[in-house]
Image 1 (cartoon, rainbow, N blue to C red):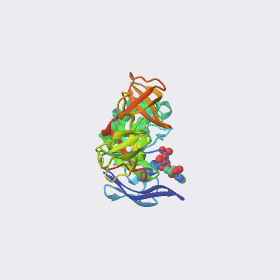
Image 2 (image 1 turned 180 degrees about the horizontal axis):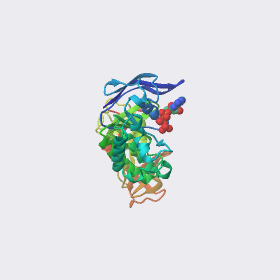
Image 3 (image 1 turned 90 degrees about the vertical axis):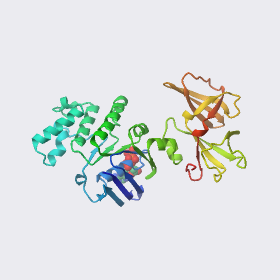
Image 4 (image 1 turned 60 degrees about the vertical axis):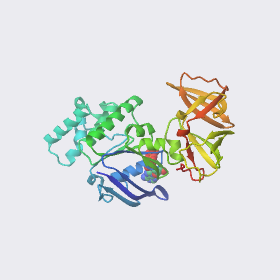
Length: 359
Ligand code: ATP
């Protein structure tokens, strides 16, 4: 079932942490709320769960208004960062707890717990207490508890952040698989863009209580709506530089650090401001020949090897440095002259006054 929020606002005292949000989480989709610490992701998730009251606005599950219902009446399951297992109960009792409080008979409970435990490959752990489990195993128990109830909506708040990097990578796949098996609508909170980009059908990029962009991972990566999204998504981050738009009566060019770059054709520049912010991802910058007239010259500031790639940061003007991500066998000596070329089809342009991407 889908989740719709309308003009949803939340204030704690005078601090407005969510500002009149309107959005729909489509049925059976995996949607991630992604944003920096304090942007309001957890607050939004807790309001959908019923753990926090809205200051204004409405929440609907499948067209039915739920914001006056208690969490127990919403048929949601929630997995937290801390897993919140009951320490005195064994794994089977933890997984079956939600069924027990709903009065499910013992035999049926054992049957359902057994099925879930087999799927999550924790059947051999059913008689253990949480303290005798590893972080990844505890995480699976928490998932099992959510899974056994067949919730309409599955809510997760940074469920992987306590795990080490390797286990986190494994669990990303398992969670996605779990979402598909459950055929439920999942809403996932994280500040980790890798999690958001790899797991989600849709990503809502949030900042300061506002959804900055809501789209597929490809859309927010390839066509960021504004400077915030452009700078937040992508690693290493997008390069930004001020450019002047010129030559509009003939062939338009972008002046960057004294060089004229051919203006990208994908933009309608006829009504663009003369002063713009150019954005280019390090993956779309290459090292060019020093005598290439379309390349921007500078000198190597620093280089950094990151596995099979190398980052080369080139200073093209005082305090203006651009990073290129190139193959690791491409080498550059510190302070050596270098020239950078940009893939024109992959350039981004923003209005500095509004921060919005040019259409
Ligand atoms: P994080 O990733 O750090 O958890 P977040 O994006 O989930 O951040 P929220 O936890 O939703 O952010 O918090 C948003 C803002 O609301 C923060 O400024 C926070 O201090 C404030 N806030 C959250 N809960 C309360 C509360 N119970 N009382 C007062 N202020 C709160």
